[in-house]
Length: 175
Image (cartoon, rainbow, N blue to C red):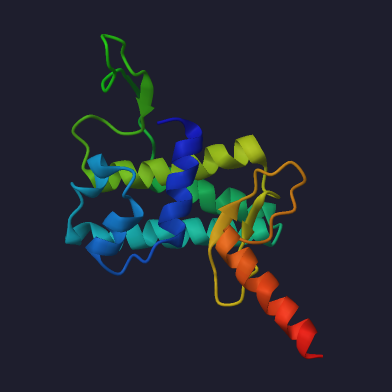
């Protein structure tokens, strides 16, 4: 995985319903090497990580740099990444070079927690704090990273944007 992938993991954990193992596994569908190794007793730790990620993201949305710094550093301190270079998963004799954020024998929950903390930290380093947002659609509370050129993203997905634009159009038509 690269740093952008770890930032996506942080967002998926922050946005996930962490109430059940099935929900967590669904959120980590792109990382079956973690999802398949998680257990129900990992949920309290993942909930704590999710809460920390949400506090940091809320601080970014509120432009509160001191809280961003404190929350991300608390996550990194509690779940320190232990980076190691890996070359497995390639094909045709070519290694797939990438970095893991936990040791080879670390429980999946430790790697997920470290990946989320590292991903959010690297996301801030790469994008700053002003490109992180929360969906503006009514009833949607999803966090997102705005990588658009004009930094004008207001919704987490085209679905939410379309839903709100259609609702606004219909409201205008009624008046």
